[in-house]
Length: 232
Image 1 (tube, helix red, strand yellow):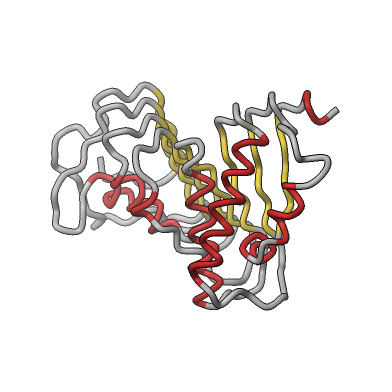
Image 2 (cartoon, rainbow, N blue to C red):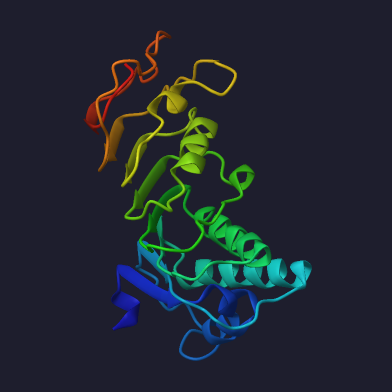
C-alpha cells in the first residue's frame, strides 16, 4: 500500500518534468492527496529522453517549481533525496540548464545530496551550485570517466561550514587538495565534518604530488576511509 511506503523510487525523463506532463500526473488521481506520508527517501532515476525540449525558460522553471512543491506535498517527511543520472544521450545547453535547475530544486528539499552518474556516454550535468547551500551531506558516485567530480569538490568547499558527511567515489582521480584549498591557495576548514569517505578506482603513485601544509581541515572528524593518494 503506497501510504505505508518508506522508500519511493520515481523513474522520469527530464523533459517530461519541465514540459508539465509529470506535474499533471502527480496532481491527478491517485496522487491528489498525500500519497506517501511515511516516505523518508525519494529516489529519482532519470532515463533516456528523445523528445523535444522546452524553449521558454520562465515556463520551464515555473513548471519545475510547481512539480517540486507537489513532490514535497506527496512526501512531506522525506529527508533524503537521491538522484541517479542514468541517461546516455548528450544534452543541449537548454537541456543542461533546465535539468540543472530541476535537480538543484529537488536537493533543496532535504539539504542532502546523493547523486549517481552511471552512463558511459553523455555530458555530465552542471548543477547550479549557488542554489545548494547549507548542505549537511554530499554523496557522489560515478561509474564513468565522464563524471563531474570537479563540481562536487567545489560544492563541498562551498558547504564546508555545514557539512557533516562527505562521500566521493569515482572511476578517475579526485582532487583531494582541492577539497581543503581553494584556487587562490586559501585553506578550507570543515568544522562539523564527522565522516569522510574518498575512493578513486584508478590512481597511481606520484612522488611529486602536492602536499597540504595548512591547519587541520577536519578537526571534528570521527570516521575516515580513503582509498587514494592523500596530500595530508
